[in-house]
Amino acid sequence: MAAENQSAGAASHQERGWHAIHWQAANQEVKRLQVRIVKAQQQGKWGKVKALQHLLTHSFSGKALAVKRVTENQGKRTPGVDGEIWKTPQKKAEAIETLTQRGYHPQPLRRIYIPKSNGSKRPLSIPTMKDRAMQALYLLALDPIAEIQADPNSYGFRKERSTADAIDQCHTVLSNRAGAEWILEGDIKACFDKISHTWLEAHIPMEKSILQKWLKAGFIEKRVLKPTEEGTPQGGICSPVIANLALDGLEAKLTVSQLDELVWQDLCHLVADPINLARALRRAQGGDWLPQERQAQREHYRKAVAALTAQMERLTEAYLDGIFPREEYRQRRQDLEQRLMALEQQYRLTEAQIHQQMEISGMCDALTSFCQRVQAGLAEATFEQKRQLVELLIDRVIVTMDEVEIRYVIPTSPQSEHLRFCHLHTDYFAEN
Image (cartoon, rainbow, N blue to C red; front, side):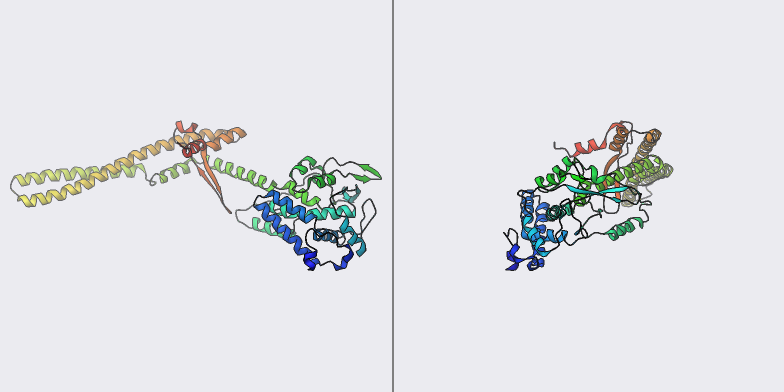
């Protein structure tokens, strides 16, 4: 019954006291709601997500855990602008009842400055205990969504992730023989201070009125109240998660840029080596045979056909002269005709192959000419020219876990140089 009494929507538990709270049951209740939030989000049921978030942020269990967090972390003795801290069990129990959305107005943050490693100072904005607890409460409902949406290789301010995980990923990437050789360190200048409030209000999946109040709360510096028109304050419990949500998708953008560069460099390498292209073309058309070998085969079959034809004529003359009886003549002639038919078939096949070889040779010449003309402008190609060349030469790019397969379509005639294969591909699958 204790767990049931502390479930979502319970009215009042102040009289039970801080030490009477069943923390294991409270944690289980919050985790159960968080799991339901994740499932609803994965199913695209955003109305249900909002309803579950509302249930969690209005639950006794959520409020109790939020107060517990802010009264047991490193900043528990650091007051906000009101100078208040919650040290006693009574104050903590009373604080649970104050965490309500109705009538909530956050107070300005207390601005201090902490030194950075480069000698400059970083602004740190400290909310009041109540505002910290409200942020911790709403973070319980926001965190499940943030974790689902997070980039795969994002490690800062993430639950169940640490610096060791980032080091392990670096080892995985760098130990690969074909992996990266360098790590570039970047810093987003004034990241927390410059995030657009309009963007945050439109994209952060939480109660909009609460988020707007936090963002516009302002801060007090040297007893002067100053407005906050942009950014999310460093020092707020929600700020790291909000910043991560703002940066989500950056990894995909960088990965796409890397893929674009990989495709372009491979294309340049391909165009710069038309000899290998010609060899591949010959292999694709049935074998890398030299024309001289084909010519020798044709001459061999031509002579064999001529020899068998002459032999049949001599056989007929011998029969007419009475050298062979009729039955023996018919048997010998039938054997020669079968051999002649087989040789003539081989001869025709060789003729067709030689004709194909001549066509391939013409294709290779056109391909080589095309590559030589393209090579001249690769280094100074504009973005539009690169796009057109990719459209012309690439059928598709297939990305798997550990490799990229690029399928090319190389023009083999002057006419095909003006046909964008991506357009041809679209027409091919179009309904008639």
